Each structure stands twice: as structure tokens, then as C-alpha cells.
Length: 507
Image 1 (cartoon, rainbow, N blue to C red):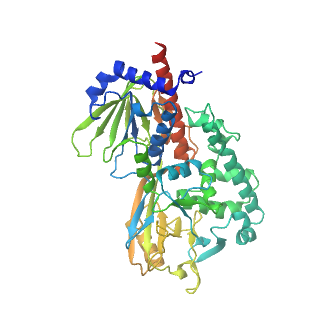
Image 2: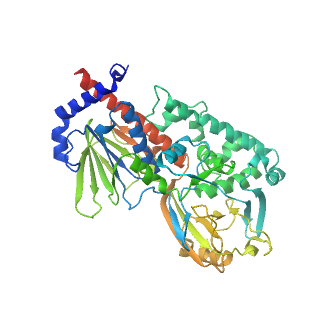
Image 3: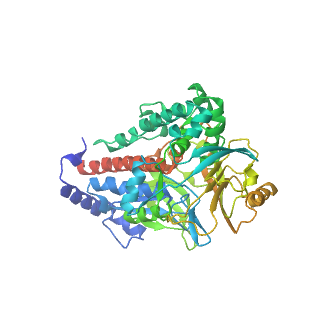
């Protein structure tokens, strides 16, 4: 049993201070940068200030506080860009701000809700209206209310029959089974997992199989009709992940449908991008913006070196740490991992999906979709694979503060490349929004993993005291998945620290 059960917290704190004075003073003085604080016992580097890195800092503090050792740990967070929250991002259009990145959380996302509460922010309930499919230019099919559960939508039932209900039941079943992960991470002896395979295998359903089977195959095996898969499912996956729903893995496909089949999803009032900064502040970290990490060098089981460029663009700096959390994607040409005792496996070849989000302010030319000009404009146009249209989504998007859009509607479009970079894309913009008054776009080079069947389900622990928070994305990419991985990282990290501290006490 862990020694902390036998000693009161006050005794633990004394032991940690003694250990600091006896073993860490020289290191603390040599490293500098912390105001000469010789009482620091442990230094942790987190690479990435997106939702994964921010959640990791929060849950590390949370788990450390249970040991009474929170004050003895310094956490540095390195972010290559000049802002926090990564793919959770908004942009200005005509004086109002709109989401362009990770958009919504599911009502059962426990960790996102916990972070929101800790940050002192508020939920903004999703708004929507009619949605439909654009099967090809000039052919639009209405599918009812985007905020109504699929199993209750008359238009969907009329087009796809009972199969919509069956799909909804399957989604609810899988989602409920996956939430067992919260129970596993919250038990008195909380469980943690060193690989994605172990995490998925701990759940009642064989979720590993869902990572090695295409979504279309999985749904066909359960008797769902081709029309439902080729239209509704294909369009939904494209709208969420900008990838072909017929070849995407089953688990990632299910994640993409979870949003669309539920009517109570939410975002952060004021913008999702607010969340990370507030969480990092709550977690008492030292944040280094504009400081890309180049190398993580494994010196020994208890020492790592992180080499990074400071925000002022000066010479590279190397800092020693006791632990490193990688909360950013690893891919060829990115962060170099050196000196590790065992080869670090290639992270699925580093194949990521590029996605461009375009915000357009203006009226929609309804004739492009084969509709009369006096027809009520749908809230969302979704595009199944093979529809000859260069976007996967056209969605009426409200401002992040929940107020109405001033003047013409702002539409969010999703494509692989910037629409303005090709004749086809430019022609589409001119055809659908001939009288637009504003347009902005942003390309996410590494928006999501390219969800084909992975060769392996990646390590979440690369070596002793080195954790790969972003490895979970290869099962499914969502804000909550990053938080689940962050909680897992915190449990692993604190378990290793607790073991090391017990060794100090014994000797």
C-alpha cells in the first residue's frame, strides 16, 4: 500500500521539504529561472498549451494536491504559437467573433464541464435550425431540425425509416459504455494506462476493434442500409472531420455522430479559446508563449532535457526537468526525441488531415442548391462524399458571445484547401455568396489525424516520466478525448512521483 496512507499530510510535507533540501538544492540553483526557489522538488515540462496541455496541468495539480505536495512542483508550459488553446480558435468578422476550430462539447463530457466550472466560465447552448444534404449542385434534401434527436425527427424517419432509430440506439449504447472510463479514473485506486490499447481494452465493449474497422463496414455489419451510410453518415463525418466517412475508423466515426444525434451540446460563452488560458492560470503554471520545443533528450530515468527557443527569438535554451508531458502531435520533422532507452515507435506515420475554415458574411444564393429564392434558408448544408462540391459543410454560425449576428448571416465553410487558392473554390464562393461583404479563412495544417486503421494503438507513456498526451487522438479526436488523456497522464505521472518519494522515505 502507498506510504502516504500511513502518514498524515503534514508529515508528508515535512519529508518533501527535507528531500528538497538534501537532494535538489544544487539542481534548483543551477537551473535558475524560478526566483532562486530552492524548495522546489519536481519540475515538469508540458509541451503544448492546447486543451490537452491545459487539462494536463489542471489534473496534475489536482492529483498532486491529494498527496499534499502541490507546492513542491513547478510546471512549465511551452507553446510554439503566441496564443493558448490550439485548435480551439475564433476569428473576427465585421466586429463580431465566431468559432472556427473545435466547436462543441457533448452534454456527457464530464471533464470539459469540470474545466469550465474551475475556469469560472459559462456554457453557451448550441443554436440551430433546419439542416439538409446537398447531394450535388442543384439537389438539396431537407432532413429536419438540426437540434432534434435523430430518432425523433420526422424527416429522417421518413427518408431512412427505422434504421435511424437503430443508429441512435447504437450511438447511445457505445457512448454510455465508453463513459466507464470516468469511473475507472475516479476510483480510490484510480486506473491509468500506458498505451491507448490498454485504455480501450479496459472498457466493457471491444473498442479496439472499432479502431481497426472502417465505419461503413461496422455499420453494414449491424444491418444498417447503404442509403443511410452513404448519405447521412457520410455527410456528418465530412462535416466534423473533413474526411471520407466510408473509410474513417468506426470509433472516430461514432464520435463524429455523437454531436449530430444529440440536442444539448454546448460551447464556452465568449469562445472556446478562453478556456485554456483560464485553466492554465488556475493551475499555477509558468506559461512560455512563442517558445517552440525542438528536442526532448532522455538523460536518465530521473532527468530529461528540453531544448526550446525563447519568445524573443534568441539562442536555443536547454532546461532540465524531472518529467515531460507531450501534449502536441508528434510527426516527422517535428519535436525530436533523443537518448531514449528504447526506440520510440513511429506515431502512425504522422499523417494528419489539413482543414481550412472559411467565414463568409452574406446572403446565400439559393438557386445554387435548386431552391427558390423565397425559400427559408436552412441552418446547415451537409455534403456527402462525391457530391462535386469543394466544401464539406456550410453552417450558419452565431457569435461566440451568444448575441445575434448584426446584418447578414455569417456562414462557416469547411474545406481542405483555402477556397480562394483554386479556380474551382473561387467559382464556388462567387456562385453561393455573390454579394458577400466579408470573408476570412484559416488553415489548420494538423487539424485531425487521418483516421485510417492504425498500425498500432499508440503509447501514452513513451518512457519513464515521459508521457504522450496526444496519442489518444488516433482513437478519436475531440476536446473531451484530450481531457481523458490528460487525466490519464496525471494519474501516471503522480503514481511515478509517489513511488519515487516512497523510496526516499524508506532510505
